[in-house]
Length: 120
Image (cartoon, rainbow, N blue to C red; front, side, top):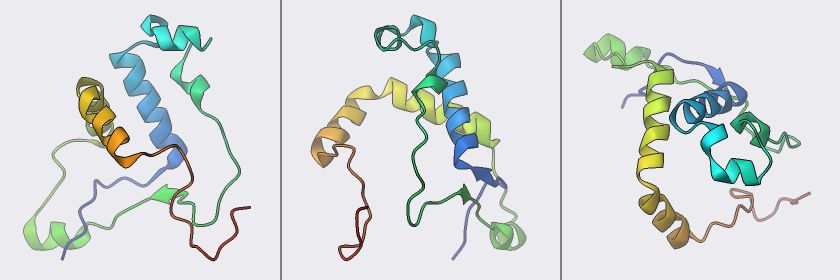
């Protein structure tokens, strides 16, 4: 069994900033009707900081040393390039995204809480 990682240890805020940067390069906020209707000039303005929650991941890091040593594996692209490609894929495949959202019936509620834990 192998962990596959990209040699990145990034905070959630750095990842969100990368998503905003990718969106701005692919669909500039100034050209986005929904952003204009919301009165926002940048995607970063959509970010809302909320109180931390139990079990919240503050960073993401995977030790890929075993797969590198045993198989000579290495990532083919850097994180920011892959993130931009991922954002582009989601933008180009909106019908798929809509179908997944509809099927899952996700309504932006908190997920992953143990039944016995307080929601406070």
